[in-house]
Length: 84
Image (tube, rainbow, N blue to C red; front, side, top):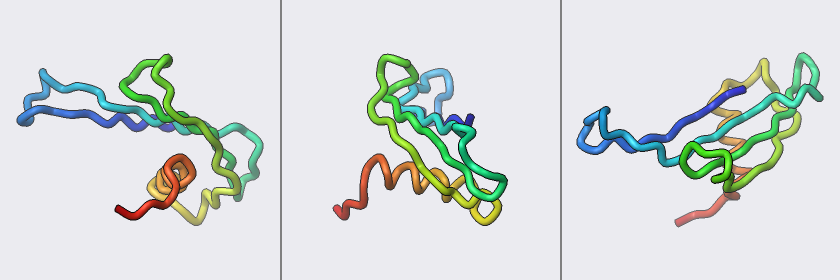
């Protein structure tokens, strides 16, 4: 599982940090050595009951792309491509 945590750190004071959102990306085991299939979950805050969006990314070329490309595909699937 890949977990991405988005935090707000007011004025750089770590003691006051607050989790704004998390993204969990899980390999669902249905891919191959070349391509992976992933389930994802976007949450507001860091609470299971705060699930905002879920979805899947299929045929991710794991040997060709890195984790940032996977994150881009997750966000594109979850949020679409909107300008402005």
